[in-house]
Amino acid sequence: MRQHDVIVVGGGGAGLRAAIAAHEAGADVAIVSKLHPVRSHTGAAEGGINAALHGDDTPELHAYDTMKGADYLADAPVVEALCREVPRELIQLEHWGMTFSRDEEGRIDQRYLAGHSAPRTTYAGAETGHHLLHTLYQQVIKRGITVYDEYYVVSLAVTDDHQSDERSCHGVTAYEISCGEVTGFHAREGVVLATGGLGQVYDHTTNAVANTGDGVAMAYRAGVPIEDMEFVQFHPTTLPNTGVLISEGVRGEGGILYNTESERFMFERGYATETGELASRDVVSRAELIEVQEGRGVNDEYVHLDMRHLGEERILDRLENIVHLSEDFEGVDPVEEPMPVKPGQHFAMGGIETNEYGETCIEGLYAAGECACASVHGSNRLGGNALPELIVFGKRAGERAAGGDGSETEIPTGEDARTGSTDVLDDHPVGAPEPKSPVLTDGDRTGTNPAEVVDRTVKRTRDRIDRLLEAGGESHTRVRADVQTALEENANVFRTQGGLESTLETLRECRLRYGDVGVSDPSRMYNTELVQTIETRNLLDVAEAITLGALVREEFRGAHWRAEFQERDDDRWLKHTMIRWDGGRPECYFTDVHLEGDSQTYEPKQRSY
Image (cartoon, rainbow, N blue to C red; front, side):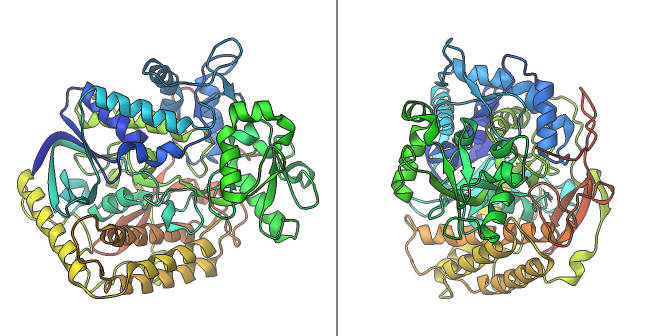
């Protein structure tokens, strides 16, 4: 067993920033990651980092745009904290050596991204995430923070109290990919989950293959509610053949969307008559798909994104990697011809319920970044707000886990936050039957001694891996493919009652089949099939939560569109959807949205762009 004060699970932007903050608070910190940190998906972020730095912009205006973009489902205290603190964090990044793009006067340059009323997006070419990731990793190395890379965290070591709010987390167990050993990590102070996104639950996604919702699923099975899982962002500009992201920075620089009739449809078809291509992502994604469905799509599949008019010099200066992506994956030189683009899964607004300091309802367990939901994005994230979330709330969670910040919280979690419930799930096939699976739940350990909790979790993890290696059942790949197909078809941009109910039936069958999966590769070293098999169980839990949230929420808000409910319904649905794993079956309830901030109260208004 290895011991540290704080264990950070995940080596992307949020995990690195959490580790730095915990170290600065005096903690002995270790990062445990299934990837080497510089391979984390943060490196693929292209658009930039929003911050009100200069000109007529202010944190208050940034917060207003964020609340509006969220369709008023974000929590104002969290949003205001983000917008207030990110300018200081951005300057800190510059002092740490991050190379931002500059304007003609030598200042950090800023450009427009969709949904913003000021040019507040700082950037480093179109490789902002890459520069951010390397800058933070350099600081981790400089401080001598321990990094266990290629250790796949399988379970949380959590006590077995009946009420999840009474449980405590004492560490994690991890499969060491290079040798096949299972190792226990005892966290004397706290565990921070920073495991990133869940995009692999869909077939067409901008997310890396490692983004399998591990942290969300582990926290969920340990008893932490997961929040607003129905709100999944589909980015409007991805390459059709691969899902590779084409940065919103292209539209921020003046890129134009056209249909097959050469119409600039965002304006000419009335989708966003004021801002056009710079409407929020949910608006643009729906517009593109409507164009395709109504016969105005190119090859009945996509639309065109044109940036030729910007000129080669400007394109290569600010968007050079976009040229390479388009050429490499679509065979199109965007300096000479328009790029094909269509919506693809990009980001999860929902995730592990936390307060504004990354605390969950389980003592000693924290979360930050895309796997967490504070909630700063509500029902729709604005472009350029993901990287600020990583650095601001990664820092906050790291400080809190190390005992370095005792500020009062405004956002309750767990049972303290519950304000209503629903029995709609009683009529649907949800939860586990997995008669042969050794993992119906996490957090059912006996004993309260921290070291014993970790030891028992290690034993259980070893037993689980042994069973998978010894079984001769179905390959997880077919189960995963069926999960991805079901969500791609029925829990995408457009959703229907029948499609969601059909997806629940499919997921029920997939759960039964997963109970019989086995791993054909018997080796212990570098057994990627074993890792992927465990990931598939996490995807099953995440997929079901997304589908349940989408079925329960009977309205059209932000990224969540329902055919049967075509209006935003503030009277009934101005609330967060919570899904909690309760003895092998999900329970759904609701919590309040906090619209009162320090600077203003955000009264819901009709969104228009």
